Amino acid sequence: MDVTLLTAHLSRSSGGFAASIPGMRRALESHRDVRVRIVGLADSEHPDDWALWGPRVGAVAQTGPRAVGFGRDLGRAIAAGNPDVVDAQGIWMYPSAASLMWHRKSGKPYVVTPRGMLDPWALSVARPKKALAYMAFERQHLARAACLRATSELEAENFRAFGLTNPIAVIPNGLDVPLLGKRPDSERRRLLLLSRLHPKKGIDVLLAAWARLEARYADWDLVIAGPDEKGHREQMQALARSLNVGRVTWLDSVTGDAKDGLYRASDVFVLPTRAENFGLVIAEALANEVPVITTRHAPWSGLQSQACGWWIELGEDELVAAMNEAMQLPRAELHARGARGRAWVAMEYGWDAIGDKLVAMYEWVSGRGTRPAFVIT
Image 1 (cartoon, helix red, strand yellow):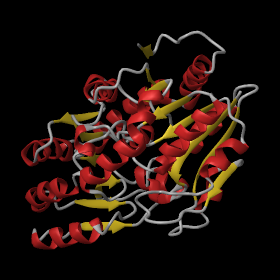
Image 2: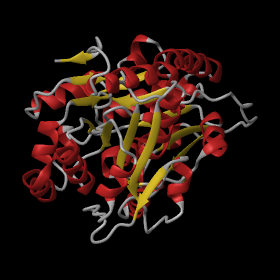
Image 3: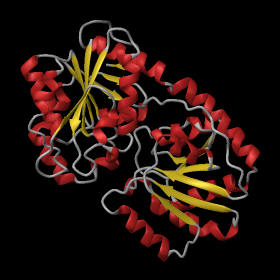
């Protein structure tokens, strides 16, 4: 079976896509007779990044506005792999139109994985652009999909609320559970937010909460790391100055061993997100034995049931209460919570199990197998 994973920009600017799509490829190709090709746009801002997405990558030059994601040769690149099924990762950009045109020409099925882009908060952003894309191609693209993939039950509910009636496969994102490095020996303690710097991540809420707690916890520091998006870093740094907070360190993108090392050097991971269809960084933090604070806008109720973190309503007071509770705990208790989180995500979100489900979904939509039990009709 030949599968093409279609996305927009093949670069670090794609956030979680840059980790999860190559991970999908590896998980799928661990199955006999499954061949995977990744097709997307070469990013003019990071022109060499596409090579990091693995073998069999079709990187197409983009023309026109970055937000549109037009690549004249996307259709040709999809067809070159002669796929049995295409999985379109993300929506609202030209790759959706290319997926739909390939389907009309070939008669073959495709899956749409919206990746949080039908979340109510996400829909409220850039509405004119999305309305235009919806009328031009996205309405038909979503309607004709053989299956939609949701990464959580919450995201599946968002699909139905949007009015989509397609079958839905609920398959979480997967992750590579890392080998654990040694924790650094330091008297300083650390809160970490690691994500692309975007308004939906709630960095403003975090800084406001930190301003209320910083003086109380002199042995704690806050680290905010990740790639900037549309100048949001500068806006948040200005907010930090206006709040008169001191112990905040800002880091650019970190990857690979450096990222795992940053997790291991942290005591608590915090992501006060306004919208998250999955939240790969949450899984990564837990896999590195770091307990997590996040909001109920992320599908991580297991933080409570598995006793490995805090799952709270989005709000400054709620975040202050959770951070205050976490920062009072001894390191041994935080490490114990992190260890429970690692055991949980290794069992639920390791790529082996996720790859099995993805193959079953693709076999079903391409007529090679029966409907899996995790597909909601």
